[in-house]
Length: 185
Image (cartoon, rainbow, N blue to C red; front, side, top):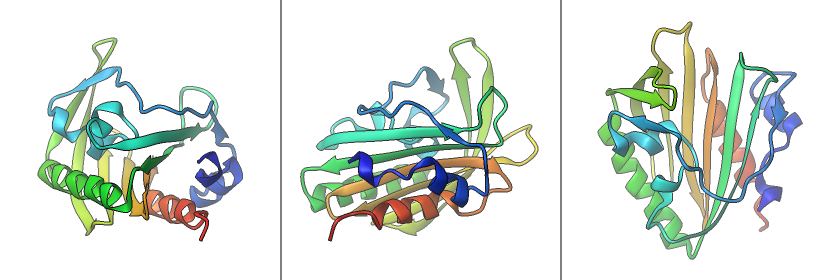
């Protein structure tokens, strides 16, 4: 499954960056260290989180996060690939997330971090329809910091991507497509 993740050079190219570096790859859904004012919007804002995948019948999830070194990043990518028991289960997951993401559209969500600091996110409109959906989220009180979410089911695999940066357009969608292109035929 790790072979379906894009490498650092591929992500830098899509993100129009030059210094993004990969963190340690993981093999489990994330365990959120924050809370949301509407917990049902977790999947619309973040890729690969455990509560989103709970009860979805996935078998495995592998991920890699990438960003510039340090605390102030111009780009951030979380690319996840989830293997499901069947193509029907993968598509059903994207369909259920499309409903959730659609219900979150146009909301402002407060994210409360462990240190009690908060960030405000405006959730954009749902774009596309299963088997591939995208959504653009904008962080309030920043200079156009945005994240595009992409979720795509191809066969029994779901590509779950969060791509963030300034003046972003469709980078998460591009990453999901490039990951899907690596699937053996």
